[in-house]
Image (cartoon, rainbow over all chains, first blue to last red; front, side):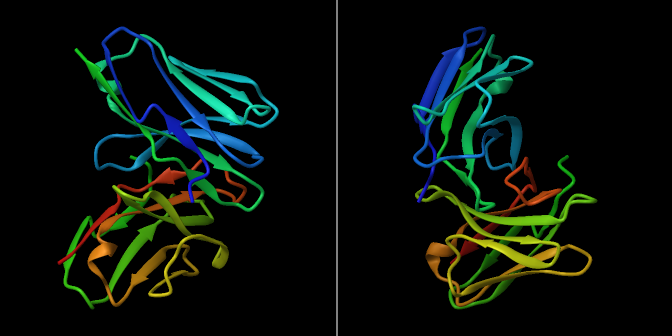
Length: 110
Length: 113
């Protein structure tokens, strides 16, 4: 079964707007990661946040982690058409397995 | 380019057949992971190898098997194929084995007819 669940399942915005995706998970984690997948391609790692971190930035990406609520959010600022992709959260526990959610499909309209 | 190479990119076969998917990890990576992606199940973890040894097992069917060779490349064998095995199969690699950043290959699209 999936550990993380992304919300919303699909998001459509205009270029220049911010996009926020959320991820909820069920069990304790060592870290949480976000990946991007362009249609039919391999996943690309975006950012990793450890369980003792609350916020992390990378370029236009901002990730937050709330372990008390078992949730994370990914914010993409000033979105571009090239950001159109599926975004997945993945949780890593102590058993070496990285478990992915079903993803959020982000469409950025020019 | 992630540095992870998967072959073949596409595979079309019939039910009941057996196929082998191949993966070469990034140079220096000791861990190889196999994932299956389908529309209904999402991205499912199948199995992980670290330096030749099986390290973790996920939702891998008994008809499926994998191994990692001394040169660290890995193969995923799928046998007695069924229509429902049609999916995109990804290999990923990482330097270590503690759930760190994964580098994904471009996948093998398997179609079982």
